[in-house]
Image (tube, rainbow, N blue to C red; front, side, top):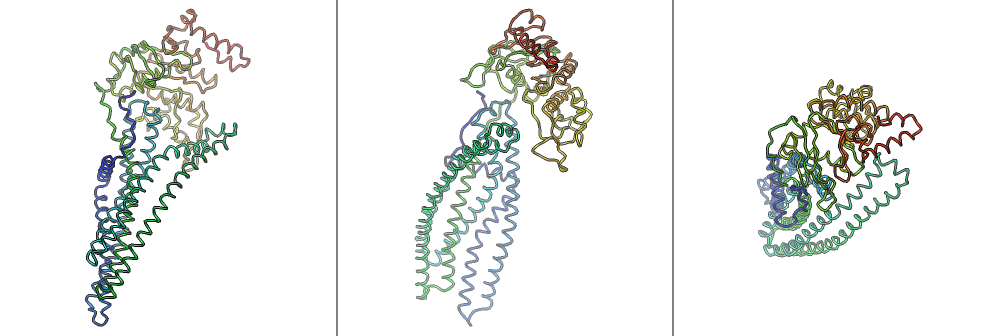
Length: 621
């Protein structure tokens, strides 16, 4: 539906892998260029140290084997060379570890910044309601935190293995060239098989991603406080535990099956490597016994054989890790590289409302093959007017609000702000002129001050403005009485340093959401979607009294199932089946005897029949 949507899996072709590797390298260079180049240089040094150490060992052994004829200078030089190589290895390892960690942290920070900057760039909500996209997004978040570090370690290990393996192969050529063919005969198949194993492991990681997500979902349900009531009331604990363990067993079985196949392969490779080593040792012993090579050559030869196979093993394991990391990084890169939507045609800054808002023949549905939620809606909201929106659940009321906030785009028709299509206004500019209380309002794990202040970020430090918004919402006294007043943390997840976090009741949270909307006092359009649904009758009545005074002379759109709360609106609009079927003031709609009159009569009768005073207090009018 959206032009910006492109739900495609990460590329797994060789060309795609190369592009992902290049993108990862660019990310590392952008994040920490000095650290990255130093780490790569140190990897070359670290790879060269084992062959150099082996040569110094050979020289020392050969010189010592000469007995009394040994030259003190040559022995000293060889010993000093070994000592320096050892010192360099120790010092290098510490520095390389520190720089690799610094580079990984910097890349992780930059990756997170780029990913969430891209996510924040989505204009509407359609991406966040697409399960396939959410799966990719979760994978991208994981990759942004994990892939930079994995790639850094893998690339360093690859360079080290290549330099070490190359150095030892050159050593074998010098000592006895024919053995190189035997080594390559064992190493090349080993490398190919290890690469294949790496691809299988990477493929398993990707294929098990949905299994692990389902396992995590059941774990969250079993530990989520909001789900705990129903889980215990309906006895769902063992049911959900069984589901979680089923997913865990499925993942374990798949991993075990792959590991069994790889175990057989690894055993064969080890036998092949062992055969080559035995052959090499036998050849070295034979040639030393016949005086064709020295004891130092034997030492160097055996070290080179072990070094080549160690380098091959390290290279293939690092390549497999890098491949898995690149697959994950591909999920990250696919989101970051998505085309950014073109800017609005006329982004000329915030536009204060002068005449009004108009919907012209607006049609909307959530999927291209889904039912129409809005069908040719025509509606004018004059500047300064109060409009009530009425309809049964599913009539399209909340959808209409989302379109006004440009959280979705209509498939047909236009929404005009002072005659200009809102698609020609930058989304952030349009939304800066609107304030709203949504039916599914947010409760942030922030302080009380911040929970209101997020409604207008420039007022976060202005406690006076925040309290002025909280008073008409009826929540100022409750927040001021918290352990740290407005600076009290409202959270079940995070705990304050002195454990003085607090929780609010549902009705108090509702008032906080209303205060958040009131804080944006200069907004041109106020949208109130069931602003009193969590309040008791007395609090609801008091809130509506305040709303009437606050919305007088302001453009406002009010949705409520309590029809009595809408009777003072300038106009009431009735939605039914995605169409506007009635409109007019409260009295006229009652006289008309249509949908509104029927709903009002049903609700009034229910209140009149209720025996308790609370129900009577909630009677419309």
